[in-house]
Amino acid sequence: MAGPVPSANGFTAQNPLTRLTLPELRQRTSVKWRRYAPDVLPLWVAEMDVFLAPAVTDALRSAIDLGDTGYAYGTAYAEALGDFAARRWGWNDFRVDRTTVVPDVMMGIVEVLRLVTDPGDAVVVCSPVYPPFYAFVSHADRQVIEAPLGPDQRIDLAALDEAFRRAREYGRRPAFLICNPHNPTGVVHRRDELEAVAELAGRHGLRVISDEIHAPLVLPGTHFTPYLTVAGAENAFALISASKAWNLAGLKAALAVAGPQAAADLNRMPEEVSHGPSHLGVIAHTAAFRAGGPWLDLVLDGLDTNRTLLETLLAKHMPSVRYRRPEGTYLAWLDCTALGIDTGQSDGEPGVVSDVAGPAKMFLDRARVALSSGHVFGTGGAGFVRLNFATSPAILTDAVTRMGRAVDADHPSGG
Ligand SMILES: Cc1ncc(COP(=O)(O)O)c(C=O)c1O
Image (cartoon, rainbow, N blue to C red):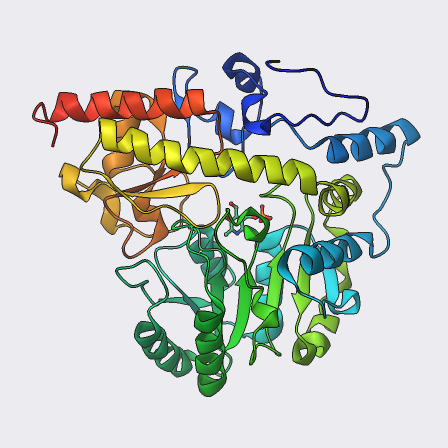
């Protein structure tokens, strides 16, 4: 392992994104590191190349030492999130008794959809968006309706109004699945935007489900607004988890949070859903929200550095690729349309995370860099790639340099 040895409680002030070497990362067995051949730099799926937060590893080690590996119990996870939400986001009326644990955010979304919509009903999403929004919604027999983001990559309220109107034609109980912060653009919706969303949803009679998995990853200079703190969001739901911000996707646990007028719906959640999260997951996520703040701040600093480094690298190696600095998440949404690469299967069904076509395929084949292919994010995604910059500056530099060389080989003039 590179860098200083941890202090007695395991905490050092070093950037967690620079602690693990490439050979160490290649020993990982998760999908990010195993899906592609060993010569590929994986900057695709949303896993971070971090050395875990000592608060989390300490909690897990104690649980293992005690054999505390039974069933999860109690409200510690929700209490830890409530304290974190008050401290970081000023969410002071967070109510533990309006939460329930769910196995993960996507399963939580599906279970909430089952509570507030019926088969055949419409679910509106703002495209381009996290591909499983398409797959999970349609597998739950609901219909996805797209409200494309505007050219500034923010919510287009006129498009949303129109999508909400159409959604009413599908069935009695439509819903809006909002991604806040938005994956893949990294846009963090402002309070005034969310208030406008709540007003529209109220007017058209849609229930709102807010995926806030990236909320702790809002980068310096931007403030996160929890949807449930917005006027008009009283009958909405939020899904929140420590899994993205502390890299705990393999330790399953998340929370569904209901607004005051959604509490009765949440109470109808079938009991077996709360049996899904793993006890070790709940322990890890609780420790993250309770004591993982100093580590998270180091990650946010590292990500802030990387989003600027990426800007510099792109300007140098691929000036025709357009990049808008994300306000949150560790995802960069790169507009590669000027490269003129055939977007191939881009007219196919969105939703299959592993489907690679267009520029992502070119970068995989010629640069040996794995990115997420834009077309799987729905309308507006073709010609884009999503790059995960939660890695070391060295790996990021190597990846973008290789990508630049691949583009130059294709277009010797630099286009
Ligand atoms: C917006 C969004 N929602 C949900 C998930 C998946 O979360 P989980 O593993 O808790 O289902 C991700 C993962 O990247 C995501 O970006």
